[in-house]
Amino acid sequence: MSDQTTTEYQAESPAREAWRMFRRNIPALIGVVMLTVIVLATSYGTFLYGGDPFEIVWAPHEPPGVTPEFPMGTDYLGRDLIAGLLTGGGPTLAVGLAAAAITMAIGISFGALAGYYGGWVDNLLMRITEFFQVLPALLFAMVLVTLFSPSLLTIAMAIGVVSWPQTARLTRAEFLKIKELEYVTAARAIGARNKRIIWKVILPNAAPPLIVSATLTIGVAILFEAGLSFLGLGDPNVMSWGLMIGANREYILDAWWPVTFPGLAIFFTVFAVSLIGDGLNDAFNPKLRER
Amino acid sequence: MSALLEIDDLRVTFGTRYGEVTALDSVSLHVDAGETLGVVGESGCGKSITALSVMGLIPQPPGKIAGGSIRLNGEELIGANPARLRGLRGGDVAMIFQEPMTSLNPVFTVGDQIAEAIMLHQNVDKAQALKDAIALLDRVGIPSPDARARDYPHQLSGGMRQRVMIAMAVSCRPKVLIADEPTTALDVTVQAQIFDLLNEIQRDFGAAIVLITHDMGAISEMADRVAVMYAGRVIEEASADDVLDYPQHPYARGLIDCIPALGRDDHRLAEIPGVVPPLHLLGAGCAFAERCAHKQDRCGLEKPLLAAHGHHPVACHGIEEGRI
Image (cartoon, rainbow over all chains, first blue to last red; front, side):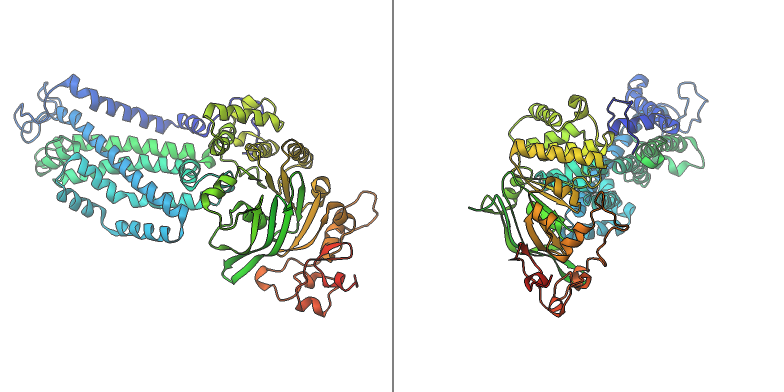
């Protein structure tokens, strides 16, 4: 960035600049709108719509659009699908967010320490990372969930525990690159300690790819939760989109709708999250900025 | 009476794929309060390693301080505990780097960064530190320091950034300021301004400055004393005037001859033939021997020691024997 902003005296932080780039990105904005609608619908929709998603309210397998009271029809037990969709979104999103948070927390800690200290610390942490990396993720998550009885918390933890190695590798790579830069030496030269250099100097500079990765991890975690629920390892007491698909999958040939609607809900949520992730990637990537 | 900063017989080695190489070999330097020591030499001669040793920033491994001592105010720095060294870095000893483009953290405002440096060493709150930072920006000659303090490094020019680095370095009134090629990346006009600023700062703060450079012009403008380094050793040391006017060592003479002078009618500028030998290929003799016009058998066999021969201390067999 050799061009001087001589006319523009308004200071612009890198974060602000990224936000400006992001706002220009139409697909990313569509993603934000979609996700906002989904979050609002699943958080407030339940109260507005009312109804217990577990309650049997009508004949089973009522097709959508036949009975005005149940526009999306009912499932194999005669439960209202709209109530299920609205209630089930919250847990799905919560598990996705929590799992992504756990993934980032473990991954960033491992990657940062390994990349910064190098030597035997790096060796030890990376061998542990590889150990987790070579386990088949879904199987490992299934084992963890069965061991600790399925609940939203254990599912989120299981997903986090199996997906952090990628984040650790990404973080490590960023740290290896950034720790050689002169401003890190300069920080050391003013007497900053390692802890401060890791979290306050290097991490903020490594943030852009990590933020993108975190966003995409949310999408993956939502799919993961759906997968586990589909296999019958979801929390049976909490309605979620994955549980709806899992419970209704045996009847998919007789009734397409109890599986399709939650499937579409998952699809649009993950799609929205991915659009946002890609938008953030573009916004943070200086090479894609037109100046 | 010992000097403010004393480097004594310092030896630094690096483990490389060629085995262990000696980057610094019995380097002895000293600098007093208010004095500017110039350290000159080609790239790779050990200037920056010397600076990093004083800061305690030699990456270990692969680097290793194999011997010698570095004393600040009589306090030994080699082997001092890390917390003490951290307190000294940025406190009593500060450093200015070569590349103002890359030595500031791109994601924080320059005001924040200077304030951080202040808060690391002084017991003040953030608001006071920011106020001090703005005062420092003003002191180093940055116009409208209030506004500039809220700028990010990429919004400033190279000269401004170097001023910011200087402000950060002097924020805790260091006793020793190490400037590692502070002007190499800057325009000539900006270079002169930075030197003026360093001189002013020295007058105000009474700091000792160690100026590392390969620019003899910078030396003549700034330095009181000069140490010429070659392949990890100090080969000549004297007052700046002596080195500039009566260089002794053939290498130092070569360096001085490389300076273009106004009104001199030479068609070509003199140059020193050859390059600095790779450190792992240094033999038993003088490291400069292969490039030296005065080479004799002894030069290839025995390392010359820094000693006063005639005019001032120099490490050369030829001078010692009186043939040069």
